[in-house]
Length: 266
Image (cartoon, rainbow, N blue to C red; front, top):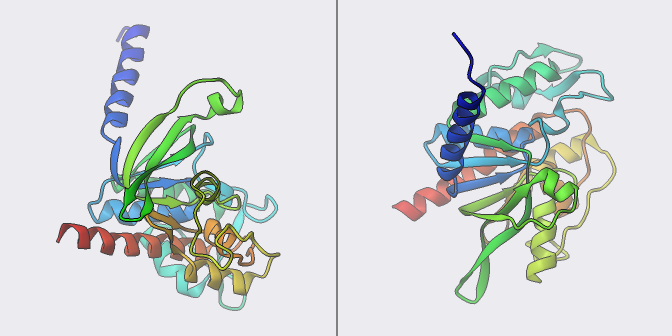
């Protein structure tokens, strides 16, 4: 077969154009393709909802690839093992009730399951703002404003594009970028003690894991938090290289939003 460079280019452009056009209106827009949001994407796609993830970096996976201090193994507690098994992750027994899993293999499996469920991951796209609409007396987050990551990195003056979504999930990890955009640009209070992003506390694995799952949910009308963004928004401890809370947080935020979506369509 003789290869034609222009045909290759046309094929890529046409396929991407179709994919992007099909995801300009979403049930759920997930910002940040870390483990929590990719797990959420898997469960949303599996349930038949129209969702997409937007990741600023080249590779999805967040901090999961590197394991603990670049030892590419990560820990998992017993109650998160069923989720890992559903995602096809090989968990090996570790010490005192913990399990360990290869961080590269685990991340690859989560990516594959998320995309395989029908939830698309758009990488190299930076969320720079949100869409909002008036809902009664209170504005509501109703989508994202996006640009190419290199455009933002180089500080080029190129206008972004808008994407509508019924719900937005901030899974940007430690920065909680979307929560900060909302408080800064909309001048509103989040559902936190201070009304702002409270910032994460030092490492305490036990409390951090519990806090992550407990505080996964709505932080402002239309805006939800998952994973480390939940810890940062609500002021919880970080937890280090144990990822059960991330998996559980992703499943939890998907379940909460699915119930909301069902309520809207019933």
